[in-house]
Image (cartoon, rainbow, N blue to C red):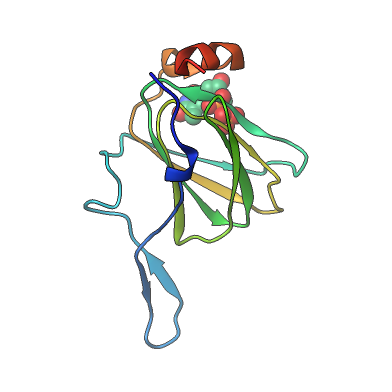
Length: 139
Ligand code: TYD
């Protein structure tokens, strides 16, 4: 596969229903908000502020990340360029296509990262060594 243009990856608005009586907001993901059927949901929480998660790419899997609470940074890497996107609102999500190296860092206290995933868990889909990733994208 060839490397992806990171400029095409951006935060996406999640439909929000504000309560007319001031009872707060509700966001919903259904229909064509995501370009795939969700096969798995997982979430990261209690991540120390000096820890990082991710540090891998996927061969096929796509995922949509949402900061349900708090904030964190997602560093995207296509093998050539890097780009950092901050997630800090529950009604914004980041769709990470396959073939992109990602690192999640700078977790705020109480941050919760929800991940809606296109595939069930398969270790064979992971690329965990950066050199292997560079070979994979041909960079
Ligand atoms: P990993 O995806 O490497 O975490 P992160 O990218 O957030 O740092 O997963 C950490 C461990 O959890 C690893 O041993 C695999 C396991 N795991 C599952 O068993 N099922 C899952 O759905 C996920 C996401 C991870």
